[in-house]
Length: 127
Image 1 (tube, helix red, strand yellow):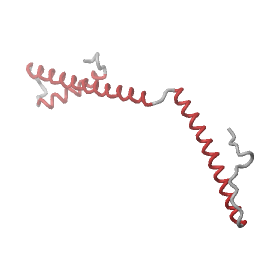
Image 2 (spheres, rainbow, N blue to C red; image 1 turned 90 degrees about the vertical axis):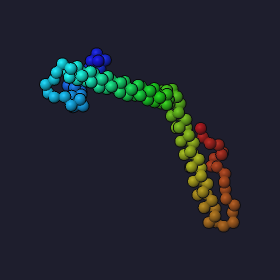
Image 3 (cartoon, helix red, strand yellow; image 1 turned 30 degrees about the horizontal axis):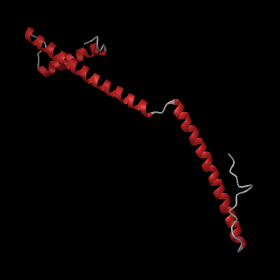
Image 4 (tube, rainbow, N blue to C red; image 1 turned 45 degrees about the horizontal axis):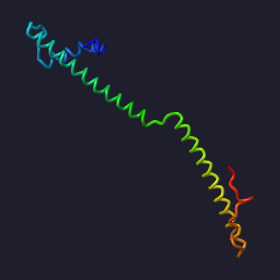
């Protein structure tokens, strides 16, 4: 057992104390009580190793799932470029909207002239 889980060796005296309490054994043991204590302690140790193995498998599965969720470097770089392009496009659209709104407000205060919805310059959107 200690080869499979070396940390268990340091815990062994504590596991044995728990076994002793569960079996209600006195401090001085007969041969039969020593055998019962050894078997019970070994059973608890094996149960701990099983729980540890199950937790390890769960952690490994979680890591593998997380690796599938996180995009690869090339994909992440592409996503960031698309996000930057989208952000720039949104900023240009907001600037255009603010420009048109200010023109409408200015034209609305002059009276009966229709609002000028043309874009500044030649109307092309810069790349």
